[in-house]
Amino acid sequence: MTLFLTRPGLNADTVRSYNQTLTRLCRHLGEDVPLRDVTSDRITEVFAAAWGTAAGATWNRHRAALRSFAAWAAERGWAAADLAAPLDRRPEPRGRTRPIDRSRLESLWERQDLPLRERTLWLLLYESAAPAEWALSLNVEHLDLPGMRGEVKARGHWLRWQSGTAALLPLLVGDRRRGPLFLADRRPGPGRMPAAADLCPHTGRGRLSYERAEYLFKRATAELDPEGGGYTLHRLRHSRLAHLGEDGWSAPMLMSLSGHASARTLHGFVRVAGGP
Image (tube, rainbow, N blue to C red; front, side):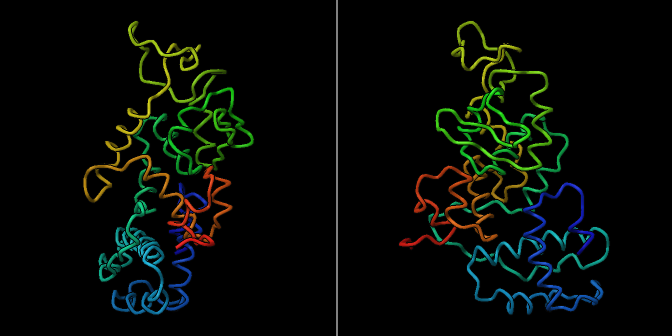
């Protein structure tokens, strides 16, 4: 368990969430029991005792953490490949955007073959829980890199990110001092010249559009999506809110991070006074 949680590339939120699951499993199974002696039947018993009455989202979060650990251990020959097989995913309330499993997102963050621009945008969206339109509207001159935040001028809101995004942003910005943070792949043609505010004075390229950013994310995540269509940027944001809600964040805390104007819009992620 310790080796699994101290792997390079895991962010603090993932480590905290996985640690909650695995620590409780160890407590029930016995911390000195060899992993090779743990069976799927025993795991099923422990899950029923620990989270049998939990909400579907909570059960699914712990299940996802175990599945990630089981797959990692099986690759090393330390545990049976079907350790988590008997645990079925539980239904979650209708009308809520189903979060992307943390393990799938971790595999995405670890991919070094993806362009720097895409990796930075996706991690920024996840860590800040911000709408994609807000992140795409950021300008280089509105970033506070040491403070790990950026101002969305049109909204009067500061996006806040964590160490993953903080490590990538300086590489993406380079020596640019002004203009859009996320740039299109090439310069616009004469007939499609964007507004001056959406042009980079250093490269002549325009601001990356939401449609293009959405397409690239769906294409990159098609293999991760069990349905094969790839994930949307909207779902990425909601996954962050769901994960933080599962980790115990309150509605005011989520509102401060994500920019939601009303706590009632967060009732799918946390309990809200007066909500369902």
